[in-house]
Image 1 (cartoon, one colour):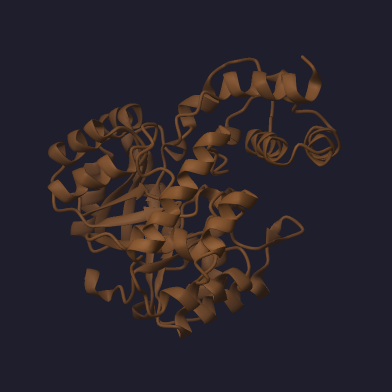
Image 2: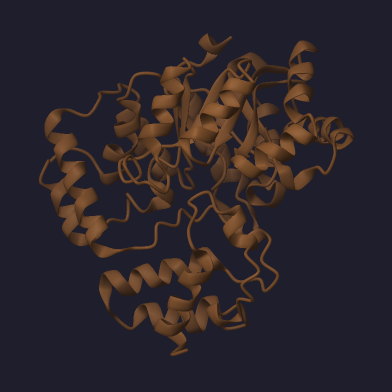
Length: 370
């Protein structure tokens, strides 16, 4: 069944094009059509993506327009949407209906980490997924993972039936102790689990590079920053799929261009991305990927990723523009960094394990003089 996947590049549907608060159907259809026409067929979604609009957008733009055998669809079970074992099946059925399909090719236990795993075990989530597989409603059961390598090893030991693992993997996080991409990848290799890569461009951070980092890649006279970022994880053995959360037809066209006839990074390109890593680390930027898991549960409705983005902009460019965006765009109607009540919900949800409460204090001092 995994052979149904045609190529090693997937369409992550977490950042679809939006218009007036809704998914831009016209542009999404154009992206889906271009993706399939180029020979790719893997689509990834979750119920929480775009506040539930990602799944229904796929029904409109993909599953109602193409035969079921022409695409591979992955969805996920997220802890926010069930409280006990009996909630899981009804939620799963609602996901099938939202996506317009009668089975998922892959169904992942979402955002697994030490605490989330305990909750999933308590609710027999894995057992329920395996039962759904036996009923033909899931073809492959896997996990998406955000934690330490030893936790991943524990999960794979307790549930050897897991068939595939999705991890964050990019050249900036490869040896970052907070994310530990390399060590998590090594665990997957040890247990013989194929890997799906998420966040290869780290929420756009490896596309919108600092000027001196961009110059390093420009000197290669080859591809774009995105091409080196996406090709980096795809160059490793055991990588089944690299996802990209594309939000414009231009991004889709560019990525198809360098992934259609994929070539691994050569030694010169690998050395260049390592140099880019050194530049990033010297700047002490906040390594937020704008997944917005933190924002969903914030009682003060602080747009945490946006505030971190303007903080990074201030660090990079040292101009007035970041102050304008902080005061007049992101916090004009509330949600300032200083509004944080330090409840810690954001940090529990953060896949990057960022010290968000401390960082918000720094943001407040930078932009509010507090």
